Length: 440
Image 1 (cartoon, one colour):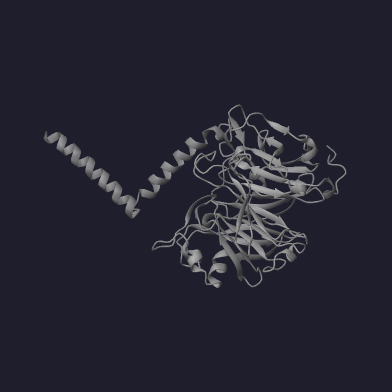
Image 2: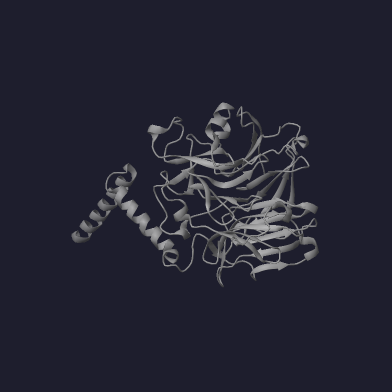
């Protein structure tokens, strides 16, 4: 009996010691925890490391078929569609016809494209473990895109690097009429010594609104914390409530925590400014997913002109619309892959003055679509909407009656879909290129 009491006592002592070391973060807690995390990462990434399946780019298939499905050719239009995602064994941006014909490809080799970047201390082992989210095509056939949270890159029509900006760019890239770009970016706070604002404890990523010139120079870099502080908006900055401010878990290279999850910044175009009484050309529409918050601000004075927390859950991609509304993609995230609890993702229209909301797509008899993250939409002519159902590897176009007239399914294998991070439609006349071949 005494033998068993000794065993129970030493088990309790070992358990209590482990708890104490964990709470106080005493050595060898860090070493043990780091080892456990590495084992978990290797176990999770084993299919990728073995070259079998890119686990970060694939999910269980939810739709039958693959490639292009044309439901109503006469209503689909004739645009090119730019697709960013995982195709045929690697990361790629490609331009396709609506019949599925590939017009051009820009293969992406993230490891090679990010060599020498100093802010990246935890480099992925293989290209399949990098992320790429956010891409725009330019009339000359070049593309500008993010290697997510690592760099912003411009490739020419034939895939050569034109420039690289070594900033943790991520999510959105929006091109302005003057050829500049607004991008979501970040500053990585690894320790308190370089942190001017002591409200939050590092390590965490602080999102910035970054303006990039046509030549790749950084023209402006606006701290979101400074925006909230200068507008005396501490209630919004500390929105989660409680007695302490908090950060959120994040999937960013090097950074386990974040504040806002900035996923879009877009300037009001001059040709739409007349539809918005309260805003001026160049005002920024900013999307902060972690707070279900969108806001409009002057990038020169940092004055916050308007904000709204709406009836959406972990939204993406708010856009200015010519009728004086703001439209966004409501992921309607509920912790399930297919929206089993809250239902379809949605496209929502907001009237800034009244803050009245209207669901444009995703309710009633509308097509059901759902992505837990990265949802995008683009308003096309004739009432058509291009939707990126990212995690399902699906892109589709609806007509003015909310019927699907065209769709594209990106399939990895019989059981997995491959993610499409973004899709954008471009009229054929947008491009100046007559020959995409590059002499190959």
